[in-house]
Amino acid sequence: MSLTPEFLAESKKNLLKDKEHFEKELQRLTKPTLDNAYATTYTEIGSGEDENASEIEEYTDNLAVEQNLEKQLKETLEALERIEQGTYGKCQQCGDEISLERLAAYPAAKNCVNC
Ligand SMILES: [Zn+2]
Image (cartoon, rainbow, N blue to C red; front, side):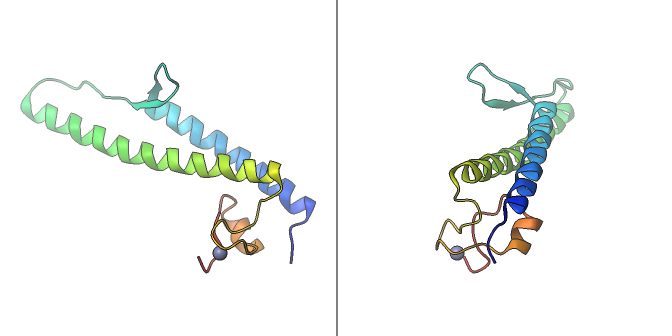
């Protein structure tokens, strides 16, 4: 079964919603730097030894969440680009069509179930 224009439109809508969500989360978590990359906010709690430890812990947590969000945002943007280029729904590894169930569950999917 191949992609219908309706399915593509629905996927695009979901991807744009995801994109907005990821961008908002990143903004909440980070401060944009000059080169437009995201830098994780380093919360200044205090300078005591215990306080420094929890600062670092929070920083590390934020960094992991931020990297995950950036990865998801990147995949979402790439999927939107594939919609524009007409290659959406094709496995990036083997070129097979990705099942509609998989795309419905995860619109940014770039590989088929086998890859
Ligand atoms: Zn594949």
